[in-house]
Image 1 (cartoon, rainbow, N blue to C red):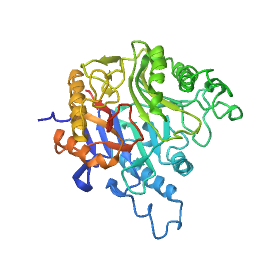
Image 2 (tube, rainbow, N blue to C red; image 1 turned 45 degrees about the vertical axis):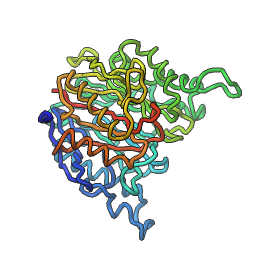
Image 3 (cartoon, rainbow, N blue to C red; image 1 turned 30 degrees about the vertical axis):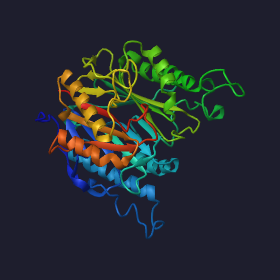
Image 4 (cartoon, one colour; image 1 turned 180 degrees about the horizontal axis):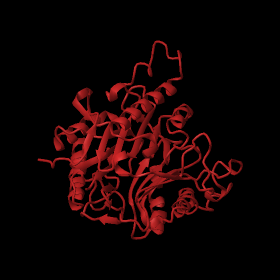
Length: 421
């Protein structure tokens, strides 16, 4: 039998098909709100006022109504978890297309009172609910924690007024950096910063993904971390979004050069194409770090689990959080080990539990589940695998359809965050 979780589901609901969804998870000082969409009472289908097929142009624009519903749900979650918008430390947004974003921002800005925490936004192929154009994840601390997030807006990391998020936020021993792209600092030099671009009219004056990755690391991530006295060595978790998964080996070359033998737990996720605010961009990176000089330390977990990429960290433990690298059902050389969706899910969950045990926790303490499917038609089979593993437990999941995964034949990748008290 699985261990009893040390977490608490906030406003748990049963969705269609018997899926037990946790709109929020409380774990120690943390509140995780994962997989939010424009649904009433977190129940699965989009709210009627959002998707009105008989009068679609009546009233507010569809995406404005969708965003209003999502932030109404967030307000409910925060209140029930004894938290508030000023205690949110990070927000992640996935959109179906670019024109979703302005309406969403119009709702997000007043919700956060103009002080939007570090944010990551990119475009994705499909979501679970019919008519859904956005999927949002939020991370906050509770009032009982006594923690006070402090937002930082370094002058050398300008943010467009329409977004108004802070590039860096410090909360206790953790540092959150917003998603960074190679977008030009000055739009007159854009769309990409000149040093991140292949020379016009040249075939071999640089490699596009390497140029963008080096620029993001050297001119954006390092300055962001330096502004709060941190460095790349302090990074414990990174989500890397690529519009072309075949860029992964070249990206990983740069990543290994920069991090050496001290990499963070890294998940590489494929977006749509285009996938970012800057249409020409190939990559976006966000990070979580531990504060230098704090009590929380970075600990690499090695449970002997094969990973999709050579030398990829299996997991990093930082305080009471365990971050796993993006997991697929692979063998020791990174090739597919198991065929069939259910077999792949069970293989991944077995290996994830192995990592959790090595870190002194259990998969029952999972606080954020992100599933990246090549076909969302497989979601029911994914739920059955979870349900067998953690019967009667409500899960904080988000499911997104992606155009490709890095391993031929792979049907799903999991990005898991686990509470490790």
